[in-house]
Image (cartoon, rainbow, N blue to C red):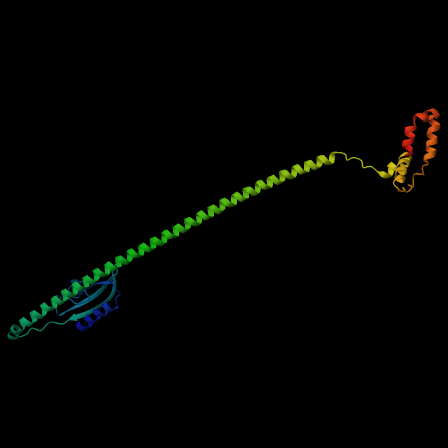
Length: 262
């Protein structure tokens, strides 16, 4: 148990250590009778009867949270001395004026506290509105960025699909052209190629070789003798033709003989 002054100091210390915006409620319970009183201030009410022992319970109120007990102690309010009758009459006036001034000061203090509390609530509301505004603005910007990113991704996907389709179309055209070229080449390969003229086999004919040799001599060129072809004597060839065709025929074939001579 503590005395009256210590109890006042404890209540004051609770208010000093509290955070801004914290409210308190103090319950003063008469230990003997069980009667209790409530006070919204961290102070011992002057209305409490003197000469009794009380249990003080300090309850903390923060926002909408439930009340929480932060301190409790027992203290004694000493009995007031009864002054003699004559001095009591002399002190009535100053005591009354002092109590009145104290009540006025307490009222002014309470008004100041209420004013500060209202101002604090006003600023808290302003800050909450400002915070909500910035949060909504950030959320709106984030949603706009997400929509823009989705649009860009969709555009890129459509372009990729277009390129893929073009690639497929080009590959199909390439395969068609390749197939056409292969068919054309196969068709051309099926056509038999013209037999190339072999000059050696051509000159292997004695008549052809003789004609070619005579023509080459007129141009000053000597054809080499082929291995498989013996030299051709034009005079013997003419004699052979005349012998076969006869003399009369020889007269009519003068042009042919002249051609063979050439």
